[in-house]
Amino acid sequence: MKVLLVGVGGVGEAIAQIAKPRKWVEQVVLADYNLDRAKEVQKKLKSPKRFPVEWVDASKQKLIEKLARKYKVDLIMNACDPSFNEPIFEAAFNVGCNYMDMAMTLSKPHPKKPFEKCGVKLGDYQFARAKEWKKKGLLCLVGLGVEPGMADVFAKYAEKHLFDEIDEVGIRDGANIEIKGYEFAPNFSIWTTIEECLNPPVIWEKDRGWFTTEPFSEPEVFEFPEGIGPQEVVNVEHEEVLLVPRWVKTKRATFKYGLGNQFIGVLKTLHMIGLDNKEKIKVKDVEVAPRDVVAACLPDPAHLGHLMSGKTCAGTWVKGKKDGVEKEVYLYQVADNAECMEKWNCQAVVAQTAFNAVIGWDLIEHEEWKGTGVLGPEAFEPEPFMEKMADYGFPYGIKVIK
Image (cartoon, rainbow, N blue to C red; front, top):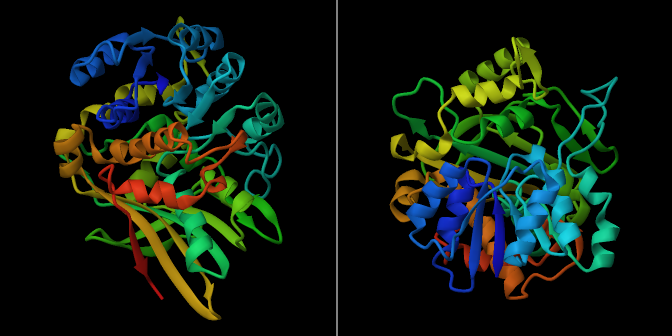
């Protein structure tokens, strides 16, 4: 398989590192706007022919198409912030190769009732093009990171093997990671974090469909496994809620994230003073997006691994019935930062996101996952994916709650 990897930040680097030992990965083109960053990753990989470096502006569809044709790639892997999804998605379609991302095209709040009704939903742009992708015989696999991605596979597995009927599929994410020397430092893209945490969260219910609520609503305490312990989690906008109900029969779908009071406070402050704005404004003689300024002021998550300690947990809580008896389970994956740094030289949060994309490549390459059109991870059989997780160094667990 030959892949054009658009975006070589923390997750992009981890994808390349995890793909490197796989002999069926013929070539991964490291394409980024920051050429020095791409060269830094290439140097770590110690295989320049297999991991060539290219400059690209991910907002320019024609540039992406040019690189895809130059290297005759089989798949374009989108490892950028989701603001670039549309041109990368369309480039793959025009070139005639498969496409994969870890976060779908962006939403737009309802103009009059943002905390009640959906406006443009996550992925609407891509799903609107599903028939054209299917007609062309191409696969657009959306949302295959850890959340969304692995969590969606878990939901499908639960439906297939653990439940007769499901009341709720709830993604629950928490961590006890600390970063030495920083009072505040995100361990993932702050651009994406601001987007998903400050947008109106989406909930799905069988009788109502998709609807929205206030950011950070419905707090609950969730007990995370493997020493992480209880954490307060709150509603956040996330792709699983838009994906799971399309392929998994459930009465309700939610996503809740353990952010912590300090993080929520910072996000609320950024919103209050307009620094979450992703549109450019004029500052003296320069036009710049306030959110980009925030990102530039904070440390790069890709270079924080040596200062991080602790574990991160991603998983899917499912409540329903089996054989007429009420049941609750939590299917999860816990990544330890020390182990990820030792094995991949990448911090836990980005490594835990990245391995899922490479498993997706593996399943597509070996025809264990087949499909055309715009599909989420739930559209495929979950067993081949989950069987590969331990082999990739990220085994899953199942905790029976009730």
